[in-house]
Length: 455
View 1 (cartoon, rainbow, N blue to C red):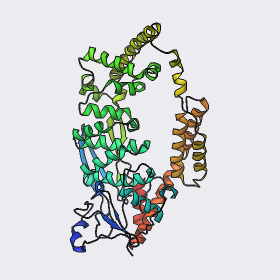
View 2 (cartoon, rainbow, N blue to C red; view 1 turned 135 degrees about the vertical axis):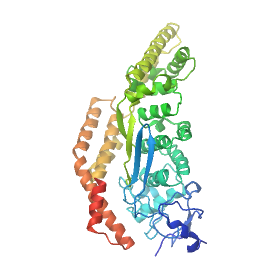
View 3 (cartoon, helix red, strand yellow; view 1 turned 120 degrees about the vertical axis):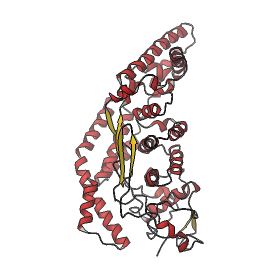
View 4 (tube, rainbow, N blue to C red; view 1 turned 60 degrees about the horizontal axis):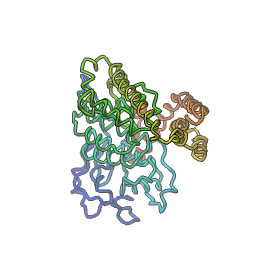
């Protein structure tokens, strides 16, 4: 008995939806539970949801797809692994719409729609009605995001990009911000479309949206000749090996204004083009790193080599000098202002007041979550990451918090190999479950293929 249905649509009208990995076209937004009234999918998500069956079927997994891009002298090939798309909706699976989503258990790490409980599926349907609800657990948001990543390669990439940008403005989770930033910047480079990068850059208006690597930020600005501002340089001060951030913390507006004037005096404008510092020859000499692009587990070759611009000695030297000279000018100004009585001496206590108050309740929640992982190494891995982030946040309060951060980092590293083996076995079990639902055979050869792909 199917729990999804499309009202006022004939089967023959959707026959064109059975092509391989093609987004559904021109269909209604309404999905119905067999026992519940119709549920409306948000207009932004129309034609972006992947269906495994039913009249809206727009996905098959018979053959993997691959896209090849040419970037910076490299041929970058991104291939679908043959594993199931994690956001894929099976319309015959049961759904229970909960009256209170806050009481529903959060999904596991690396979640899939098919692996959710009926109640969790109900929460996900709630998300599809309003993907910009910040109160829905980020695990459900990641399921939606996986499907959007697939669209970046084989679907409506422009519409998917627009939704990702809007999701970033609402969901502050660091992992989500990092993965989505990687995808937006690197897809703009692979497709050689500067307007994508520009839309992304212009969308950043909250501090949590900078939760991605400084090197990626610099790479984006250099690739599309975007100028960096004094605020950008200050934010990345430690990347440029400038550690004396006392005045930056105490007098951020003054520091930024002084730097802006310093840049204008040197370059004749208030911002700096990185291309005025680094040329193509400089870039060829830089080391490269494999940068992850996608979080979606069904996409293979999810990283590609990019130059580590932040490692450039030439760039570091110039920007460190700007930071250092700005620091000295601000120091002189502060001294003069103090002599004139223009600065309240109580500002000296600002750093102490700004230190965060330790959250014992959150610590207990995380430690309790770690104790409840019950052999689920993947969940344990992400809980350990959360503990590392938690203790690192309080590193300035006490050395013991930094020690705890290191402790849980080492525990995480020790279990990585075992976690990989467990993940492979979980994927095989999940594939067998899918095969049973779809009433298709699952052979030993198929199992070996999953082991090979997962490894």
